[in-house]
Image (cartoon, rainbow, N blue to C red):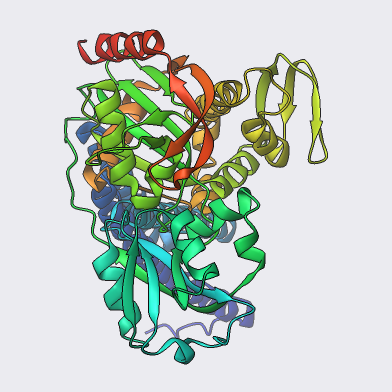
Length: 488
């Protein structure tokens, strides 16, 4: 029997190397299989792919996994260079699957965060005069405290404060009468929502500078789900966009500085943006007597704003979208600015807005959206600018070039808005957009009116404010335009 040849050191080293490479192959196959399974499950949950697209992704993942298993089986006959190349390919596939899984999970997390059950809050301050003997909350124990009776959540507000101190409630119909009462020392303190404090500050009311804050607290507003659900990928629907001026956060019930309807016809890829001036003089839903500025409706919750607009235009709003002004700047940053076509040149807040087409960064896009003093039509022109900026954002983020940057976009706007659209409705609309990859045609229209001074429901008869009396011709035109989209 011939004597077996002892392997050389080189052959022994090569054998050890092959064994190590085989182990690496096995590990990579397991990792790739795990990453592929996670990606498949996350894509199924996200549900933005058509059935055939999802099946195609599964087939590709299986083929890639099968390819690596095949490489593992033939690794003995392959050269060292080939093995190293195969390992590199396996690593790239595993990393690719892991990255796709991460982005998919990020999208799921984002959609769930904006569509989950949301509760609005109202922030309150207990204020007393600086010249009084009341310097801390305990000092008003047993004293009379003023509340606004126009607050639909007055009982809940009183109960919340009584958890901290005992007092006697005194209700007033308007904030002016209540301030007079505390100045005449008929009551020890007043309870004002943060939105009312903001309104008094804007009006430069001396009470704010003459008073101190004894206590701050919040209550949660009940907002029943009264949306009018439709198949958003097939049927036209109306989305109410409320731009909050909250200084606390998106969940606060605050004045709605932007009031816009997006009437969306998905089959035609057409969108009508109807802007309603913030100072529109309207009857707040469910109230009688004095009318009020539309912006003040937001103080009582987004449902009050929605219902008031429904009354004004005799329509049914399907969904709501609440945004903060920080949303705009973050989003514009994520898409590298927006292009606008300004008909007026002005300088404001460090931004030189030229006449004509120009690219604006996030800070200047916000200035452009909020400016009204540079225009003879004031708030009406501001609404047109807001429509233009929103339209420019929609066109950019629905461009296939920017779809690949959705991760940056999601990070930018997370926590900056809330919607009554459900998770399934958003993913259904996204799936439809991805299947068609068409640009949206956007039409703009703004309601108009006449500026005047009038008493308001929120501030009372003794404090006239600048309001806008609706031009009924523009209201009628808006109704007709909206119905033309809904009838398709």
